[in-house]
Length: 111
Length: 113
Image (cartoon, rainbow over all chains, first blue to last red; front, top):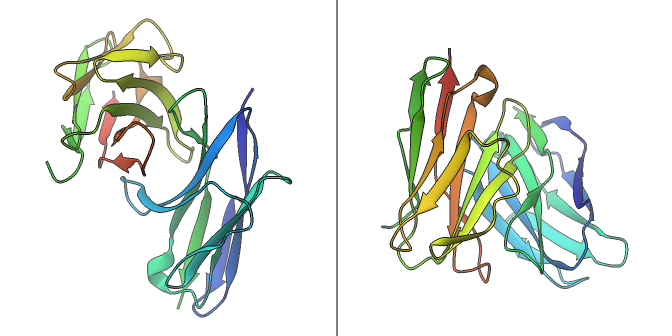
């Protein structure tokens, strides 16, 4: 059965800290991996990764995929209170368009 | 429209009643997805549509759940004889057939009392 596992489940840091969120997967016919940020209800898109070793970057956020070891990391540098959210990782297999989600990492950033 | 629109945003219903949740995807998006998120949980896949057909409805938890999509646009998710365990946020997303990012709506929070 296809599976996506995120760690840690929860993380509490102070503003200015750097955090690394992990996502590992066991999915047949992997096509792509996506990261989302969920603050209230609607998850908002962060990154889509399809190739190993190519870092995607947006401001203080960056992400990279390792297709050999079947994982991805999401880094957030110089965290701010506005980064507090649930970060969701999802994988899309080739034989379907559906997203397979992990349970998410809840990040809390305190001033 | 500019984004994915879901209605109602909140719904409180009595156990045993039927409910209908609506999703209006981004114009031109051929694929539409329904997910469910229970408190403190990740997103659970329910069903997805490509055009008006549903190639994968494997996530529907029971035969009380059904969904349809008409005109390649609006979709409705119907839950019959609601139970308390149906309480969750129901999220809809659309995409251009998986070639780009998936855009989520703000969801419908369903509470069954």
